[in-house]
Length: 95
Image 1 (cartoon, rainbow, N blue to C red):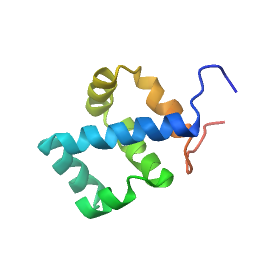
Image 2 (image 1 turned 90 degrees about the vertical axis):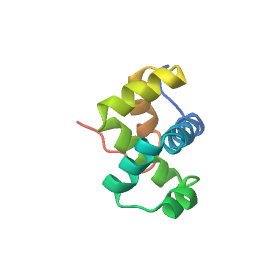
Image 3 (image 1 turned 135 degrees about the vertical axis):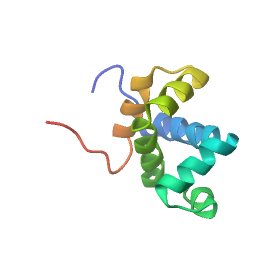
Image 4 (image 1 turned 30 degrees about the vertical axis):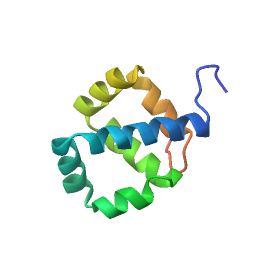
């Protein structure tokens, strides 16, 4: 593994911070719930699940505005979210 890789614990922390960030903004939350088709209860109950965390990271990776805003807010480089995604279950890799 590369020195810049992110382990599962770090990835989970990034994902949980992303979930908190999404929930903190009414417009962001409504957009996430609307586009994902999940309920607020699903979001709350799924937050601790690594597969669900990967789903939320996938969502951010497909939304450049959210990706850039969250990365800036969290003091991360946007590519950190991609590395975090690969550390959680369900990630796909380009070969």
